[in-house]
Each structure stands twice: as structure tokens, then as C-alpha cells.
Length: 371
Image (cartoon, rainbow, N blue to C red; front, side):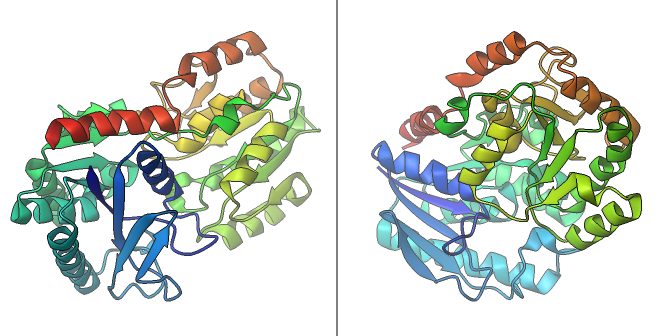
């Protein structure tokens, strides 16, 4: 069976990690016998328009990106977005007419999911679309909401990565399939007494690392041996480093910048607590990895996180933007008020549901039904 994956993000060049979980899904689909092709936008000049990635044909379409993904712009510019849609649609048609895939799989409903839906409509190819966290943030109103609803309506099957996303009317009948986790995280032997707090999200406003930094003075007042690692990069990096200086806590923080997924595993091996301050999210892969590693998760009390965390039992939930409550939760987590056995039970509970192998099998079952 042939599948064309049309995705907003896919690693752009050697060393790029943007959309790496889509790449991992593609690898696992290929390992299970699916002939996978990928279509994705060309964001950076050094990205090839075509390459073969471990046997997967990766096509990129041009648009005036100015070396920035659309989701890193303050507002989506109309002309580049129009060119993006037209260029992606025409490229998709050429690939479909040449390769004749049995299925089209869109990832992120806006904008590439709409490209997938329209290409499927014009070529009579069944389309499955997966809605991810960013979809919910950018499609609440206006033209983007209309694009979202059109793409959803044209799709044969809809997938969401979090049960909370089904609250959107057009996604009410969607199936839930989370992103996957590498087996290496389940192999980690947790350092339950570690006083290291790990943040492994991008340094972008929606992930609100600022709240974590503001919580640190409250934490170290009670836990002087606590230290904090920020593994990620983004537009707020300079601002956050300056904020840490103003608060006099630079000695307690390490900013590592963007790191590889393999390095994330080694960081989780040495950490005791994982923190996500995201204001909005889909199913967070980093959260799944933290639970698989046996860390104590301290995450925002938002719809995407609630299905995974029972407050006080296997992690902590705190109100978004509240650095004082966050600090209280981190102190409890570092004090190991949650038992190691409860954390181990959580690892066992999720182990057989979020392997990439299992995730790929779920998608293949849908492909078979549609094709």
C-alpha cells in the first residue's frame, strides 16, 4: 500500500528536529510495509526540494517563507499563505498523478490538512486527517476556522491526538490516537531522589516558560539544592535569560538550546521532575516521554493534560500562569510526596499504548479500511 503524508512539519535538513515525530511515524509505517511518501513545505534555503530519507521520498514545495515557519510569525501573512496553499496543492496533484497513492494522510488540519483534503477530492483518493495541538490554537475564528471546517468536512476519517480536542464540533466523531514514544524512555531507570527539574518545550509564548522561571525563587527558598534545565530554543530565549538574571537565579538554570531526541532521553534519566507550563496543547510528546521515564510530571491544568494526570497521585496540575502554585507543586514533586510505586504503575499502564509500533498499527488499520 502507498501512503502520501502531507505534513506541515518534517525535519528540514540533517540535524533538524522540526516535526521529528512525523518522521518517526513514517519510519514505523515503512517498517510495517507501507510505501510512504512525504510532502512538506520548504521553509529553509538549505532544505532540498527532494530527498530520500531512509527509503522515504520527501518532496518539498516552495513558498516565500523568509526562513521562518508560519507558526513563528506574529500573524499569518495573506499572500505567502495563498502561495503556500496553491504551491502545495499543485505539488500534491503532481505526486498523486505520478505515484497513485492508495491513501492521503494530512497532518495538522490547517494548512496542510486542507491541501490533503482538496487533493483527495480532485483525485478521488481517500483522505485521513490528523488534528494536532496547533490546529486548535489557530483555528478558533475567522478564515482559518472556515479552512479547518472545510478540511474536516472533506476528510473520510479524522484523528485527534487528545480526547480534549473532540470538544470542537467538527471533531466530535474523531478517533483518538496519541503521538508515540520511543522504547528507550521506558528503559530508563529513574533517579527518584534527583532534585533536577526538566523543561523540554520550545521557548515560545504559548509554552510560557516565563512562568517557570518566575517560580524558581519560590522553589529554591524551600529546596536550595534544586536546579533547572531548559532544553529547547525559541523566540523568547534572550528575554528568558535576561529575566533569570533580573531574578538572580542564573546559577540555578542551564539553557541548553535545541537538543536531539536522544539527548532528551539522557536528560530525563538524570531528572526527577518534568514541568510543562503550556497555555494550550495537544497531547504533548514530552509529557508522554516524562511519564514513560518515571518522572513526576508538573503540568498546566488544561484539557489536553487532564486525561493523563491524576493530581497528587501520579503528577500535579496547576493553573496556567500561576508561578506560586507551580512552585508549590514543584516542591511537593521534589519532596517525593508521590510514591515511586505509583509512578511505576503509571509507566506500566501506558507502556503498551504509546509505542510507535502500536501507533503505526492503528493508522494502518484505518488505511486498510479506507483503501
